[in-house]
Image (cartoon, rainbow, N blue to C red):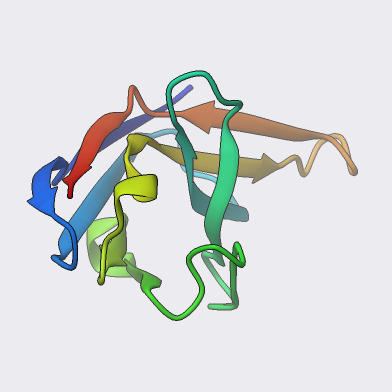
Length: 123
């Protein structure tokens, strides 16, 4: 298992900014993607952003595109989510995700999750 530890969540007013961090430790992988997902009360967990650890490509949900930026620091094994112009609808628990692509079993992937960090945006 990979351990994922999030930090940076909190309470912020609408229009403000927060930066979430996710530090990965444990098993070393040959290749994996990392990303952020969120789950609001009464809703399913949804995709927010992903970044390819080795390739540096990114993808965003339409709801956050232009406001959120995912980035990485390879030396620290850490991914970030810079959240700007926050809206009340961004309120959710944000989860860090690591997706491992198996070398031993091609086509098989394994997802690892952090415990989540609460982001609350007040109006």
